[in-house]
Image 1 (cartoon, rainbow over the protein chains, first blue to last red):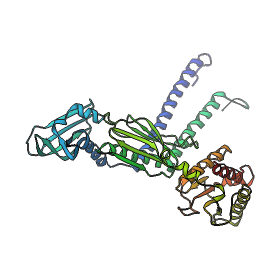
Image 2 (image 1 turned 135 degrees about the horizontal axis):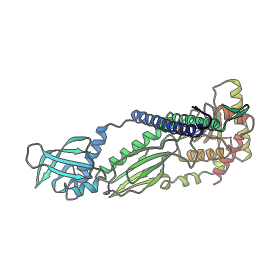
Image 3 (image 1 turned 180 degrees about the vertical axis):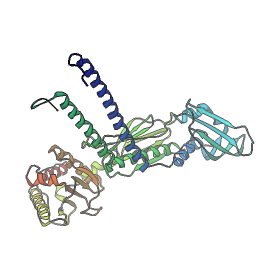
Length: 145
Length: 284
């Protein structure tokens, strides 16, 4: 590393600092990578079906957030069209979500509700019923999350 | 390696120490990731998170008693949408707990939750109206009554040892059994009549206190674990025993090879600690 005895100190110190910075970066990256890989491995061994998580979310939307209620009874899997709003959705789920409820036979215009500003990465669809003006329509609820 | 003959350079020494620290970090991480209890904690975190999601999807009142986990843990519910399962650090420090296991659920402002830490062994989830409440089961059950009902004179002990292993190991366990019996008898516990409390000794790869699935035995095992820790010896708490059936009010103390050596050399006064714990426990 040294060419001459007189001017070697500064040059050697700089090289060592560079060496240590690189070493710390590489070792830190290795540890993070190792722990991350291990965590992913644990995660894969105890994987939860995405369908289950989707079903739980849709159940919450249909049975709690937008649920059709009459005489104190909540009707399962029926959406009350008057409840589909951004405000109701925001109170129900604390995450970015867009919900679209569409008639299967074009009986009504799609209903939208959105909360958050996140960009949707995935979507899923479930069948449901929509209560509108005393009538029930077969519909789909599509969730973008 | 050497600046002068016989003198190690300070920088080289620091590099060696740093290298050892890094190696230790890798070993710790590998140990934590390969720990079966860590995996159990992780699955419990997922399970409880899904349960919270499911409870939020039900338009009804819910009362759920979570089944007891096989390993002592605390479960932390965070209202911002996370469930963490952490080792029961109040009872025994766990070096393997490098990674805190955690899983998310979708929170909502519709349901009110508080940050709550509950005992993973006994906890309840209640949904009443818009409130979702986590609570310890021990605070609502009659555990204190159950223990208070037991009178010292009603207790008849039976001691057991494992029948496996070499003659030398069997003889070692038999000595512990006889020693404990003598100490318990001197503390006025009975060994005559139909036994209703059981204690066993066995040998294995690690120190474990197994306990029957009952509030009394778990509390006794927890106290014993603490007292042994004070002596400097760590034991895991695990539900179930191999020496006794599940119905019996029983504890099984399994010693690791190092603990066996400590007991043999009288560094660990095992039977004294066990006797002291039992005596204090039933004198409450």
